[in-house]
Length: 109
Image (cartoon, rainbow, N blue to C red):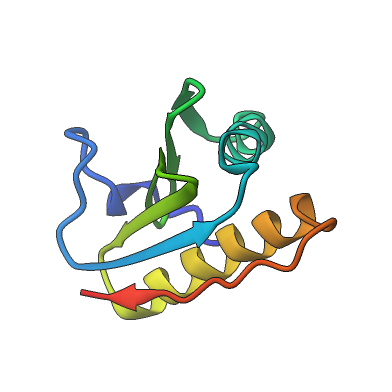
């Protein structure tokens, strides 16, 4: 992963490209917290049981528990960084959810 911190402005907002995925799971809150706790060792992270935010060097991942699903919103300065961010978040989520098969489909905006 790139460590170009200049891609995320101090305001915490990233202009560029965005992607969203909603993953139906009864364990949405657990996975949100696991993702946030995992990345908190190296990244700026804030979270509670229903909302989370992970600031990566290449973009931002906002997490929310909504109606039995984990909603993930990614923002990055460009398509390459967005694809890398989606890959990192998805791989970790799949690893944490090894007891169930998740259907993760990213919608780029």
